[in-house]
Image (cartoon, rainbow, N blue to C red; front, side):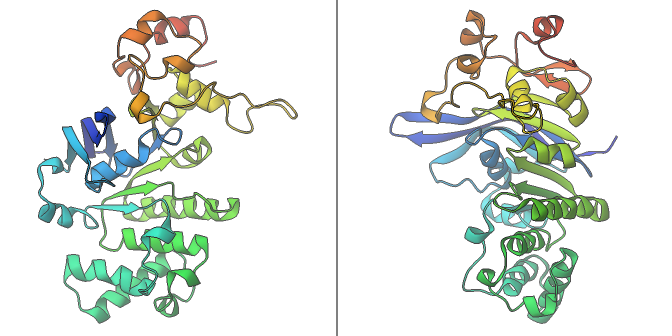
Length: 333
């Protein structure tokens, strides 16, 4: 079994608000192994992106903080690192593809210089050598005429090319871990497939470990080895792709899978999960999914369910999972 390159344990992220300190990420725990692709899945607002940013120590607001928990990278807890040490981690050990490349590419600096800047900072190469490396990176992510495109600005790239440039930038200093935040959002189906195939190819060639943040179960079905499902800031299920998609053990996961296009007959209405995800300021007590769960009981509203081991590599945070499996409501059909 491959070694763990990332171990997140009981991660808690809080935010200061006028109403007080609120917990946005509540005791999230998961691992990422060498060469593995882990899919972090959930609806918008579930905390997926925030979890990725917490690992990078790039929380989007000064009012946010990692309150507790550990993030071990190659055995070291980076939550204890000061900003100076974290600058040595970002890019060199962990790379990140941000959700919207248009807002993370500098519009007044050429794409080549933006990629070369990271190489110069981490590896101390000359400007010329850094640009040569940048051109090679653009070639590796299948951007045509890379030596010419070095001098292009981001607005001269298509959406798919901007995403490829972001991937090249994230991989510039040969990190071992890549966090890809919704890398196919706003791209047409053909370009989405190209980007996903590129990530799979990079994993194969470089031995990358990838955490893929997405709301799209179709994407994780194509690419991931393991899936972790988030809801309202908590992990509710974690398993291998095969086990989770064929036999979900949490009602939320079951609802997500059932609501995917292609799961129904022609002209049949697509199932949906009733209600809306709760806002951060109004997370319910107990299981946060209980207001939308058709199997909820009084105990679900009172007690916070632990993420317990249901099978060798299958964990769920539903206190009723065992009885629902017996009733053939959850688990393999």
